[in-house]
Amino acid sequence: MVKVNVVYKGKGLESIDIKGHAESGPYGKDLVCAAVSAIAIGSLNALDDGAENFEVDMSEEGHIHLEAKGPISEHDQTVLETMIIQLKTIEQSPKTRGTIEIKERN
Image (cartoon, rainbow, N blue to C red):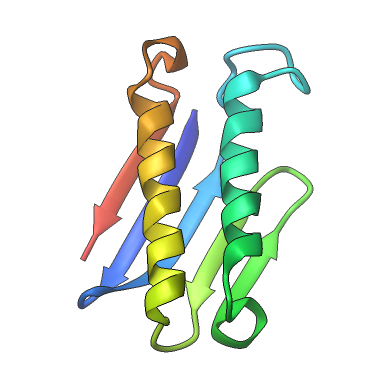
């Protein structure tokens, strides 16, 4: 199961953690994992202040952890909220079979 944990501090995003495997297809050919990876990497590449305002760790196993170092620009907040909406869309797809769990904590 892919697990996405989102933590907010006040109205701003504090961290996003994506880990696990969807197991909806053979390893390396899993379309759900490919979609999650494409959304996450594309979103991280779209951040204006990525290196300055975020700590990002990515492992070879597919674990992605993003943590804000301080206040986030409106642009970057929008990018990250869009990423969360896209991941929720995958989670709600009948073909996903419940393989994504999103938890949001304030």
